[in-house]
Image (cartoon, rainbow, N blue to C red):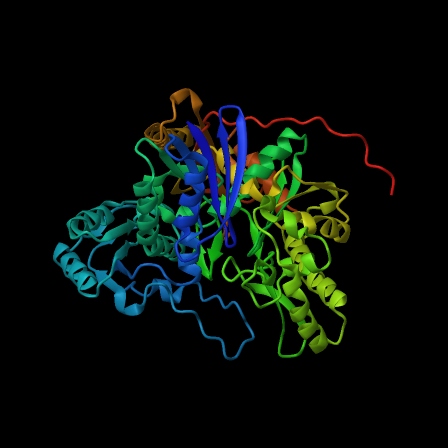
Length: 591
């Protein structure tokens, strides 16, 4: 069986495969109008008629949100709480903007329906679910032509019976349903509602995309999808819980950097993934950094994901002059179609064009020699923009790269300096198709002493997908404190989650001896609004104090410590491909 990692990017779709002891790579232009076509083209080239196992990183869910092209989605909730999604936390992203207009939610007001029934925060039923009300709401959903529905009830994390019943009533109607208890079994209604709504919004599109891929694969082929948390899940799970794939591609890159960095003897890395559309950066300090608080396009997202910061600066980022005549780069990208000017169809200068103009790219050897860059097309466009700016063409090209480098430098400072890390103590791990041309400049700007560039850096995200564990994340709100619970009681609660995790991993083909259960607690001081994640091991109270002090600079042992959520990471560790070690050459010559 051939094992294949396939990563869809904005410009290229990348493949890495292992056939026995043989490794190979392949790269094709992405097909934005139907991303599956580029994936299938690569799979046919690599393994036509062969049995294969594919781990795929997809941008379908991400693009559905960013472009607002997801399914027409409805919401069923408790009567009187239809506008939780609209009200939110009353945060304003631009505090002093007098003309600020809040972005409309993915689920418009006319598609939110309330029903009678109420569960208390203790899990007790205060008011029975009115099934007549529910059936009427379902009828309105169908009449409105909704393709998907999010079911979000108050305190369903404490008692999901009402949500389960609504799901049963929706079932026969052939409408996709996302229950908040299945997606996020935690308190904080707005974040739970928002995460479930996003899942409902993207799942039909993801289901159609994955279903098409499966239909084109050969019988016996296995398809897995990369998650935002750095692990993979089955295609069937990804179709139900598509919200977990939002950072699918970037997560693969972080995993690949971690695995190769570890093999090379480096535990402290700043990853720098510069592709065609954007740049993703993350910090690795003896392990991948996770977060459960994130957002996409302004919508809160509360699922575990790798802590990755993204900026709109990539090889395809377009250079332009703003209204004041200042040079800007990105976030608009030429993508794969029309692409940079040197690809033969584009007509707007990009970062790739600037690199080629300065001689940092070899036009005859692009994409392994399978694609020739058209350097002669550049002169006309550079002369036009240079005359507007009032500089020569070389200065313009250098200026474009300086602007792009500054944006990427700021991104690295966000995940390092702003969080108390000194970049000088880390190795800059550069990958992505455009990373190698900018890494040395960034290292100089940040005083990073060493840059690590792997073999075939343009397909590292696909390598990370081959190296990824199968990961299932579970959480449950318990609202206890250090005096109302014990370690033994917490262990018992974890055991029920571990039973569920073992069953789910077994359904993914993971044997018991390859399962690892990792226990965590979301903890805070009484009176605080947000928690930090602490490993549940040994003296977990002292562990919280220590981590709080490391994170915020102080500890308060006189304060009561609360345990808000228990969190389980069920990890299946499949057999992983081994890296091939190459003999290093002699020391670099003196300049």
